[in-house]
Length: 134
Image (cartoon, rainbow, N blue to C red; front, top):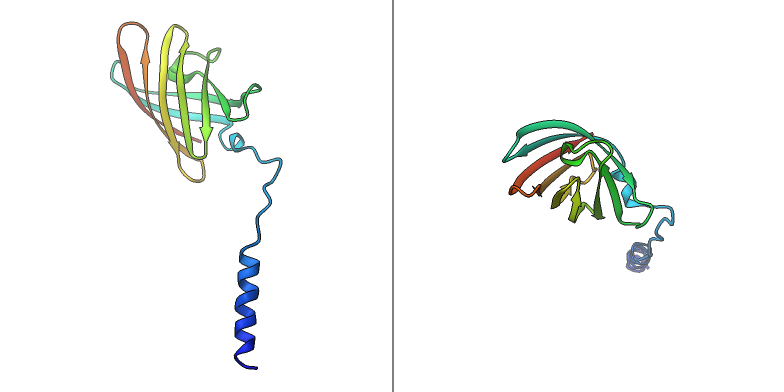
């Protein structure tokens, strides 16, 4: 009988550990990225700059976010990005006459994002790195 109790306990633990977690239907990964961010950018052409951006959720895609003032182009400009877990993809797009593309990676609690991207206004590609913080 003494051997049966630990065996039953182990089986019960395995059954509990194997329960499938039901995903929250209201979960939206983009919520972690929305809001105001402070950007510290280093660009080959313009050097170090600091400015703010505002991130909102796209109303056309459940993985897309919209960033106003990306690269300091102005609060009326919108640059789109796709969120995949803790990665961000800036697909090739033209914003205010400049071609922009790149990638980003957030920390696990999404309080900091590191970016690498290029911006080409026709005079050559400005290679940039940036860190966004809350």
